[in-house]
Image (cartoon, rainbow, N blue to C red; front, side):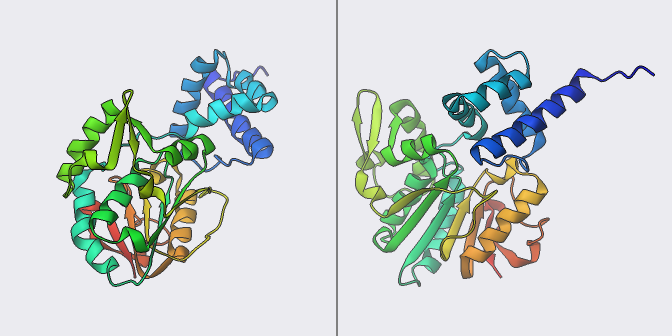
Length: 277
């Protein structure tokens, strides 16, 4: 009997094989990422690499580590900006900072820090509140190129103009220009903002907890995970956070329906700020 297989079914098989091959060859685990998200990004990669099929893309990245690094950029870089959702940072300033002041020293984990916008936002907020000197920030991501860019702290002036409005709405206490030097169309952020920042390669899919923390910020990362991987991430956050520590998430993320739903309670629910119970 003749069997007919749709092109869509074939591409799903190819996609699974590509993700498995990446894991086996490079130890980057995308197997529990949201199917729709990965599919969209891989389809975008096909045109970038001028490949007709996912199998052709797989062959290319398996035999060329530089091609894999290019693909990694397409698979992992989310859209980010400084003081994104200003009301979120205003809530941290008003509701979380007074409680952080009660700790003699503070450790903050920014998981999925991408190119560093969240890191510098948090560092500026903490400096203005007099807490940066006694804070260690762990900024982690699975993408080494993103981490390198985050370490440099250089952003286009065009973007920084938009960040300035966010900063002001987030309760900024200074002129945003005080934190960077403008040159050749770029803003170079004050290196003292990252003196207490440790940038590190870390995967929520495969790695374990490395420190006890008082606050974890993981914004707009979990939306790319399936439920199994979200549960793993919430487990890591729960293990890392100290008693009554803070978890801050992106606007479309919540622990409510995870295996750890009872382990976190809302502090400012509309801004996705939670405390470990």
